Image (cartoon, rainbow, N blue to C red; front, side, top):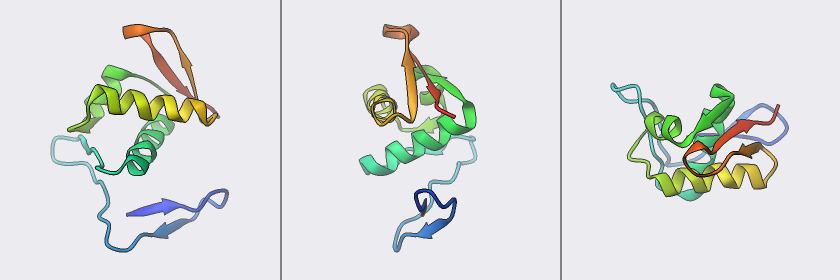
Length: 96
């Protein structure tokens, strides 16, 4: 798996990790480690521009609502996303 080196736009290789590539279904594999989950959701949000929980869940195989919401809320807490709404209408937008 490769992670971006902050502020450079360059990728760095991580030993022994496999990339979470989309499967034949078009869904991405939900990573097991929290840091990789947040990074995967960050990447999806950057591509989509905005997400609600249902759309985020549809993009990952094996993702749970609580893990997705926690990742999206973490991105919002870090200033990388903006959360709006409440309950089922809650959504997150990428900060550009």
